[in-house]
Image 1 (tube, rainbow, N blue to C red):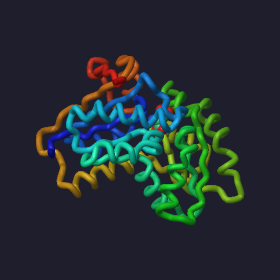
Image 2 (cartoon, rainbow, N blue to C red):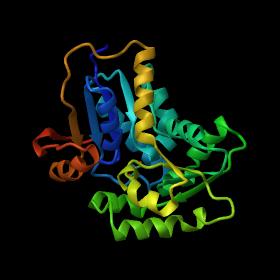
Image 3 (cartoon, rainbow, N blue to C red):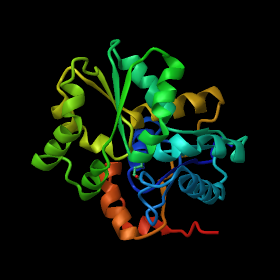
Image 4 (cartoon, rainbow, N blue to C red):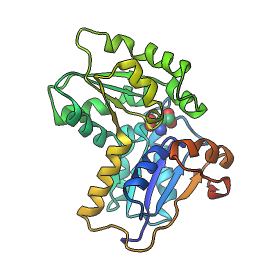
Length: 271
Ligand code: DGL
């Protein structure tokens, strides 16, 4: 079991920010990554549809007999985690919402916590519930920032356009009488926009990136179950449900390393 892969999925290539954080922290692990690029975005779809897609993605990953499944998509984590955990037990299923909530509580200096995410994640309220489960009196403000997903995919991660978008989305929250001291980047795509987001909210605000915190939780989980890989390191396996060329080109930016088109296997998740 130790040498089985860590399976990761996202609605697209954004979850490669999570895969990258896991690869940095656990360089010996074999990562199998599936991006449902044909059906992105999940963030604007209903909870029922996202859950159905997440079950199909996880089923495709099960052929690798993983030791752990990481739902590297905030929207899918927010709506589908209990269904996946029940369907694939005893394989542990880890989402990104709870690690992000824990990191936010740890980072906050007692002020309100802001969460930015997709429409689906905000509507479902999973971050608010996860934060309140840990700190019932925490004040949480949420904002959907769907345009950030497109900007990140386009590679417009610095300069005037993302800075103005960040300002427009976030100004009123951070100019309020009780501004948050912590901001959770509750979407896979947002860590690459951390520069313009930080500029819009100011230096006093701590940005919490659920990719890094999820990687830490993967490490903790593998260690607690004595599941670290013993065999020699193996390069990651990449799968997409559409357009391997785009997966490789855009995905390389999120992964922080070059992914070749030939490394991306095209898979069909429809039953
Ligand atoms: N992966 C999604 C998330 O983290 C963002 C992109 C999408 O809407 O599918 O919520």
